[in-house]
Length: 95
Image (cartoon, rainbow, N blue to C red; front, side):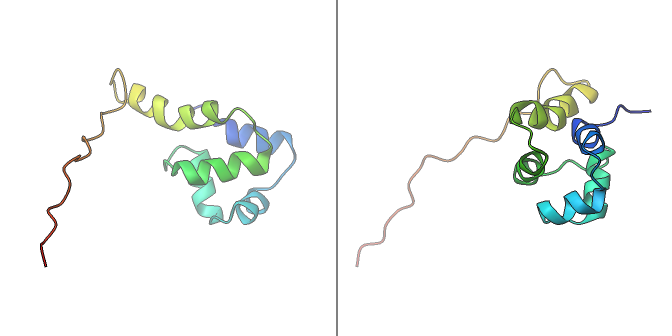
């Protein structure tokens, strides 16, 4: 059984319901449930909204719980690298 997320622990400690927090963060209650059970990895924007509504100030810990731990659970030393951004400028057409 997986450990509960910091989000769920804080929400329960505050005596708040899942639907209440989901409504405040403007997400579906089912999505929040999946996030809390680690069945869904939310976007950073969703995590920031949830953390803000829970009054969590250490956002890095909340983000790392879903992004760094995910890589460790899969046996990776770190998250997979992002593909490099293209720095080439598109050619401009002459009139």
